[in-house]
Image (tube, rainbow, N blue to C red):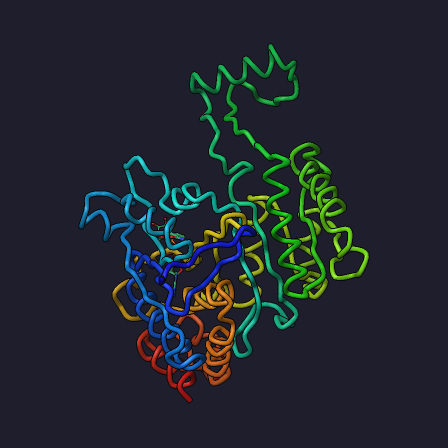
Length: 396
Ligand code: NAI
């Protein structure tokens, strides 16, 4: 048996030689994926000898899929992610003029991956725009399926916008729209169920990783029922399901208004550990925190359904068409996403080996050009030379 399955709590049950599907990705995807696969295989070998290994299974999505099959996201790919529970992917081109608006969104929706998980930490040697990047060690749980991202909106001056306006004014008695005739409209659904499953996952993670502090970030002072609901339902759930942990001090929960959080996270990031927030806030927060530790080139991410156990780990940057094929891309975002995958399946020894090797490279100024150009002793390396350097620290 080489298939990862989930127990009744959604926790992965992992054989010693699991099959894990991967999507190479478009643009720089093939370069960063090649690097990631070599680094992970080497670290797993170093950590566990021959006792454990990953059987990588390539599945198609994006341009490579379209060229080979005429489909951007073949059914077989979706099925593989469903069957093997866990997968990893490089960046994908957003198809233009096709039925699919975004392949990433299609994957998230298909598997109901309701958490966007973004751990943000600093590596010594990486140049940051803030004075104490070492104080940033924050894991963001971003709700992935609701909020203004649900894609329910109508352009100004369309029949649907007019119809919606008419409904608001005539049936709902709304009088507060400043320029009704020229307004576009969007709908922001936020549910109790959606909020609870996100905050439950964040609370469990906070307890299991010993991080203790969970902050609910919202804009409930203005959006009282949607963002305010998120805060209220969140606290109610914590009281109901985590009373013992609250009492014994393994979980401490507070909340913060989103704008204050953005300021505080710059001024005193050490005050935060795990953050649970809605979709749009999470988008802004993840990128701002990533910038504090060196940018999206080294920011990992994952989309997870903690109920079924399904998870797709991914590079957070795009396909970087300007440097694709030039052997310049930084593979660290995908490599660090792979360390998240290793942690998720309980192979943390291998994850720590990779992180240690990365830290060695960065402190010596060895990095790809995007990072090395800011380092005082920076030595810009190509993707393949950087990978080689990293491998040499893993096999030491
Ligand atoms: P991008 O992230 O591809 O590029 C933005 C800038 O960052 C460029 O200057 C690029 O050279 C640089 N960059 C990105 N990744 C890098 C890496 N690994 N190493 C060094 N430099 C790197 O964003 P852009 O240009 O807005 O999007 C290009 C395409 O990627 C679009 O089709 C977009 O839809 C797609 N995209 C896909 C994502 C995904 O699959 N998760 C996420 C974001 C964009």
